[in-house]
Image (cartoon, rainbow, N blue to C red; front, top):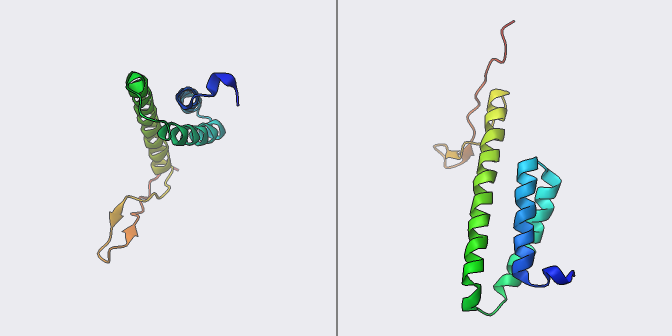
Length: 113
């Protein structure tokens, strides 16, 4: 492992930065690899003994992670909007009368012939 990223919080910061760049670039492969790196770094960071000196750093990383989640939610809404307008059916998160998750098909005319 690179000496610059030996510390789990360094690795976490780099993974969060890579995740943000992937989200902004709409790069799915980079998003998947940065998410995997983030999870590995988080597991390593959770194993660290608590240190008062790291509280500010962890707080800053939490804020960065929340900003990434807002960006990810925006991307998901964009994809859902596009799918809806292309006439694709998506799960609505609604349950039917039998308690089964259901999707409500929404047919849309995309053009006038």
